[in-house]
Length: 304
Image (cartoon, rainbow, N blue to C red; front, side):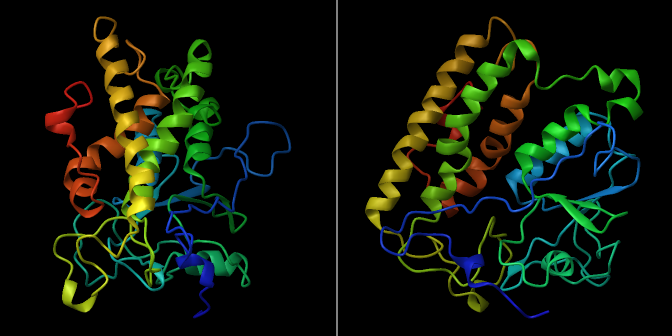
């Protein structure tokens, strides 16, 4: 299908140049409750991800920590994102990485084909992660923050006891985690995109990561910076980004006596959500997104 909604590429406000992230469209829930539309079952759900995407990276981390590898298989799309969005690898691509394969469920060429199969008139974005229900032929969710929370508990009845005990959202820390998530997401996770995608000219397609081996001559939009920015939109985004990085640095430094994680001894959701941005910061966001007031390795020893 060649239909491509215009909203897919509208990342920034045309007047201010500020980056706007559209909300996820699929917000269903896998649940252990009786008569749930999406009950937990081994092999019923398939996870589509991109290794380039920090939001998808969250789901892979939690899938591993909760022992869901044999219960929820996954496919990673090809790194290349062009006009039709994420595409699947072909047998001839020889792309590195686990499970970077053709679409094993439908044989589709692009992730967007799954969205159009479900709704031919779909006008949202085609994003990863996408959690797909094979049995019903429906997308459960494309919201990473909710997918990881499904993974926390909803499959526990079919997991070994050691994985049932993995608690990434403990009750005694939930209020603190939620409060941390709010500014971590707005200023850091999404802040790098607000900075890197602040613009006055709409790009022809969205980008998460520009691989170094991409032929820039064939894609003149991919320069450094990726496309023109308005200085005011850039400064509005970059200042809270580095203010909040300093805030996270100070908090982590204060926790060293208690343990290595954000809230001390135990690994929690707060670590996972922060980590997927921090690990990409120096190699990707400093250069490509011009988040370059300082880097992580030399400027933030606790985060590093």
